[in-house]
Length: 82
Image 1 (cartoon, rainbow, N blue to C red):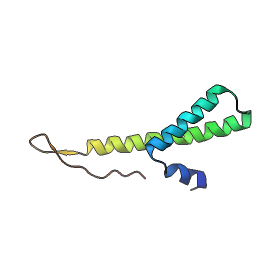
Image 2 (cartoon, rainbow, N blue to C red; image 1 turned 90 degrees about the vertical axis):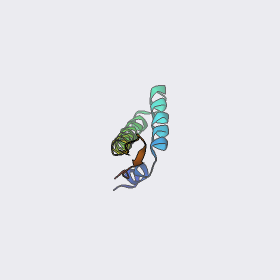
Image 3 (cartoon, helix red, strand yellow; image 1 turned 60 degrees about the vertical axis):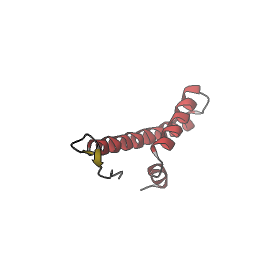
């Protein structure tokens, strides 16, 4: 895994989303030179994929919650974020 991929993999959903929002704002401003814009876009695509992966893992975890007869949540299986 590359250093940047490792860096992104270590981000929480909220951290990745915040960085992605900054990248989008930077790209929308049109102020960055072309090469920098391309690099920003590439990182943004990786951050987007990371966020989607985290959301999917959370969705799967919610689906695994075991509900008891009284409607209370009895247990949940841990999410696998790999």
